[in-house]
Image (tube, rainbow, N blue to C red; front, side, top):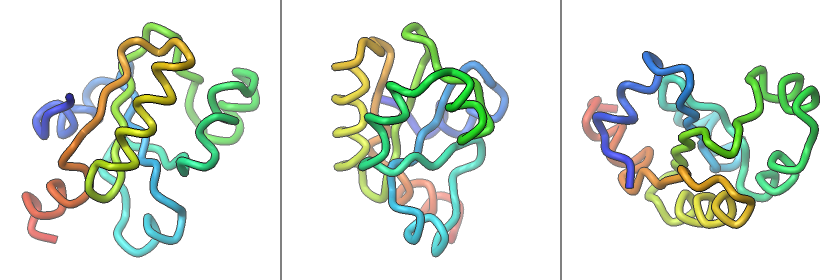
Length: 111
């Protein structure tokens, strides 16, 4: 499980991936946690299987390696856990869930 402090420090750790699995309309209404990229849960499997070049072009970020730390977030943590489970099924052993997700983030930042 990822902590608030770990997520807060993502912009200072470019080797760590923070993936928000909410739908684009949800993200548009709230914004993203700094350092995160939005890959909706329904697109996540495609993201894991696309080429490195296509991933870079689509998400403006290198594709994570199997050894990368990947933290998943959503609104309250439920979809983030599904993202973590899917990532682990694809061999990303260091995938983890930020259970507080946007709800905790926004509460701590007074949004």
